Length: 317
Image (cartoon, rainbow, N blue to C red; front, side, top):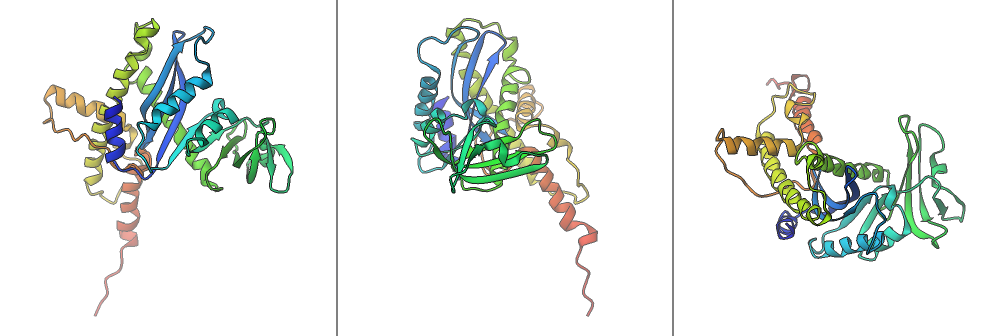
């Protein structure tokens, strides 16, 4: 699986790689900690580790396992390509951030609201106080994690009307409101876990219970996910090559399904002989937004600029 992923990451020529760290469970049997690369709203698995659920962790401790995955990543990722690590509050700690920055990578993690921050003039307060009311947002450059001896960071906090609690983000990316938009890419791994567990490989329904077999099963699921998304990207390229009518401004039917679903459907058509099998194992458009946004923009652009309401009037002699 790793040579396959390494080849695509190098020859796809991405300008930067957004890596997502998160953990999931298979019912009460096991836990899988996964690091995936974001691709057009989905998550392509790269490295992972598993252990038994609901039992004390034996052997390597949690952060040792995380460091092992990051070390393994270094041999897979292409050199001289910027890497940004996205993670949820479970990884919003100086222990994790130190592991990332030590490798020269950038990070964007969510932290607890009570995390202390210090601005450039020395004022110390909770990060949640940057946006105490709804709707409100705030940002600052300074340092965080007082008890750990402070770490230089930029902080962005958003408290929307629909938020139960402010979203507090810490990063070493340049201070900008877009940090909040970048963080949304973390949710690509949630779709990947759904593909694993219920809408793709039905991992939740599997009968594999012992850890030795559980460690091998994700290899097949990961490789299958890469294959399906390669086919899904091929389907997407075909849809985007069709000229839009200029009459649609809502989400088209094809945008209601993910690249993963498009890839599965196309593979089924090939297997049933409904279409000629002509796979192209190449991932392109690494800088494209998620698929739903991309196909909507494809039609919306034509609607705005090709509509008769915006047509340039003919010039009479």
